Image 1 (tube, rainbow, N blue to C red):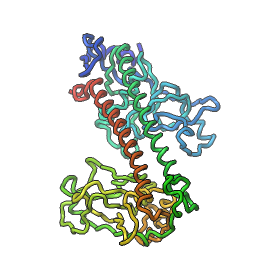
Image 2 (image 1 turned 90 degrees about the horizontal axis):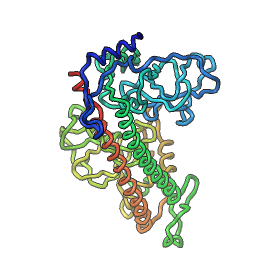
Image 3 (image 1 turned 90 degrees about the vertical axis):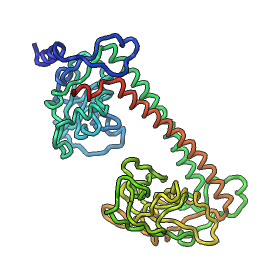
Image 4 (image 1 turned 180 degrees about the vertical axis):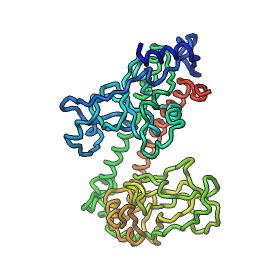
Length: 433
C-alpha cells in the first residue's frame, strides 16, 4: 500500500468528520466531510521534459497560471533555462512565492513554468474546480501560512509543508455541486466586470472626442449648440488658476482613527477620483492650521508618483470639514474673472495630453515629483464658455454615474461570493479546535 493510501485510510478511520454551515438540500442528511492530508490528495510533479512549443506560463493571483503573452507579461527566457522548466498540465495546481497572500493557483493551460514553483496534481478522486475555489479562500490561506516563518522573505511553501495540511473533502457529488455554484457566480462576476470595463473604455474614447488630442487645438466632437461658437482657447494653467502646496503634518500625530482624514496620494485613483482606503486610511489628531481644512468640491492634484500613472491625478473632495490638505498634493483654485467650472477642469486633468505634460514636468529617479509652478506652465485648450463646460460635465457625469452603479453591482457580487464561501466550507476555527 502506498504512503498516500495509508494516510488516506488513517484519516478515514480516525479523523472526525466536519460539516459547513450551509449545505445544499440534498446533502443535509449526509455524513460530515472527511479531512485528508495534502499528500493523500495531491502528488508533487517535477516533469522537466517539455514538449516543443509549449507556452511559458505566468503564475498570477488574478488569472492563475496563464500564458505570458495573454497578459502582456514580457520576461526574456533563454533556451538553456527552459530546459529546466517544469511541465504544467490542465488541472494542475501551483504553489508560488505569493501563495501566502493569494493561495494556490490553478492552471487551465498546458505549458511550462519556472522550476521555482511547486506543481501539484490530483492523485485522489475529486473535482478540480472544488479545490480551485477552496485553495483561494481566506481560511485556507490562513491555514497554509500558519506557523510558517520566513514566507515574506522569499521562502517557498514546500510540498512537505503542504502535505501536512488537513483539507476538508466532501463526497464527489457535493464537491461538484459546490464547484458548479461558485463557478456560476464567477461567470456572473466576470460578465459584470466586462460590463464595467466596456463602460470605462467607452468613457475613455468619449474623452478623446470631447477634448483636443495631443497636438490638436480643437475637440473632434462638439455639441450642436456650440459648433458655431469660436474655437477653444489655448493658455497655461497659471493664467486660469493657482495651485497651492499642502501642509507638512507632524507624523507624531498620525493615527488609524480620528475626526480628520489626512489625504495622501493613496487616496487618488490613477485615472482620477477619490479612493476610500478603508481601514488603511490615515487620520490626524494634532493641531491643524485652518487654511488646510478642505471644503466639499475642492480640486486636488497628486504631485508625486507613488504608483505608475498617479502623477497629476485629480480628486474632488467629497465632504467639507473632514479632509486635510497634506503635502505633495496641490489645491487648485480659479483666478478671478475666469470662466471656470471645477468639475470640468477635473476632467481636463484626466486628459492624456495634460497628464503627459505634467509627467514630463516632473523630476526624480525612483519617485517622480512635480510642483505648482511646473504644472502652471502646462499649456492646454479649453472652451471659454461656462455653458459648454457644463454641457461636457453633464455628459460625462451621466456616464460616471452609470459606471459607479455597475461597479457597485460588481462589488455586491464579489461580497456575496465571499460570504457564500464562508458558509460552503467548514470553518478553519472548527478544524483547528
